[in-house]
Each structure stands twice: as C-alpha cells, then as structure tokens.
Length: 215
Image (cartoon, rainbow, N blue to C red; front, side, top):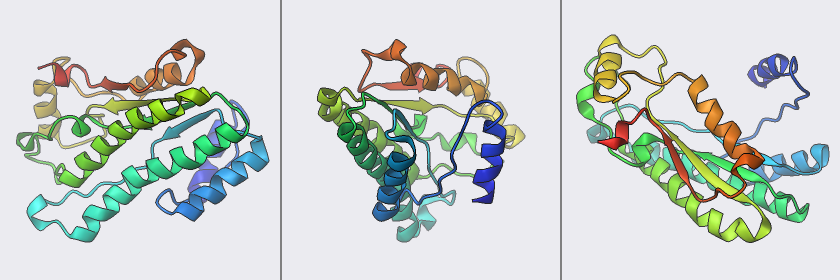
C-alpha cells in the first residue's frame, strides 16, 4: 500500500486519484475491489489490465507451481478483472473501454540467441499467458459489444529497462527500427484505445514492437 500511495502522490499533481490494493489472481479480492470502485466512483469507464509476473529460469528447470502461478496471475487476473469490471459497466450502463496488455511473446517465441548476458530468460509460461490474453481480448470483444463495451489489447515488444549490454545490442540488431522501445512510446496507444477516437475499434491486438514481427 505504501508504494501505491507514493504513486498516487505523483498522480495527484495532475488529477484526483484513489489508491486501491487487490490481488488480481484471487476472485474475491477482485470482486471486492470493483465493488469498492463502484461505491467510490459509481462506475468505471476504462480498465487497463497491466498486472503480470514472469519466471526467468530455463524451461528444463521449470517447477510446475511456477508455471501455473504465471498463468494464474497474467491470464487469470485479466479474466477476473474483465469479468468484474464489465459487470460493473453493464450494471451502470457504462459504455467503457477495456485494454489488455499482451506481449510480443504472445505472438512469437522468444529468441534464445538474444539472451547471451541476461539472466532473464524468456519463459514458455509467460508466452502462453500472453497468448491467452490476446485470445480473451477477441472473445470478450464479441461478447461485450452489445453492451457498448470495447475490448482491445496492446502487445509491446522489448522495452528498455537497463538490460545487459549484449542483450540490448542483440535485440536492437534484430529489430527493424534498430532499438528497444521507451516506456513512453506505449502510452499513446493506450490513450487512443481509451478515447472516443477508437470508438469503432474492438477485438484488436495492436503490436507496438518497432517492426519486430514484420519479418
């Protein structure tokens, strides 16, 4: 909660915010969370499902509990938040926008040749969880369209976060734009999907990857 409050203090400089902590992998926690949002705000207009975890050990060393936990948080958490969030939207007759966060690795496999100096190996369960999110985006876009609720997905490519020098070099060489993304370069797509400018856009997975999947 302290980290949440620290973020709120920064955001409060621009507009009012309300801190709320919940566990996206636990149905009752998510239910209580959206109930609280309904109590405080009346409804919800925009949901961005961005919570996620990963494991970084080689698949040969995978512990099954870790595999299930990644799916539970990433795919399960997205499912629960769509379920409870869309229920609140439907009850309050809100025509909202749900934005899921997928990944480049939900579309293609991670390239093991990139990770020469990086302990953060790409994991099969992470890719599987993101592929599930991309599919759920399409499913819920169809089933919620009648309520005026749009559901889309953003699948980022590699985002620079001070990874190893060789990894950054390898990734940049492989990417048509010759570099990794900056965090700020994902915000514009999210703003577009949250706004009325995308009012006829639903069920789409927008890949922000610098052209990675173009070849």
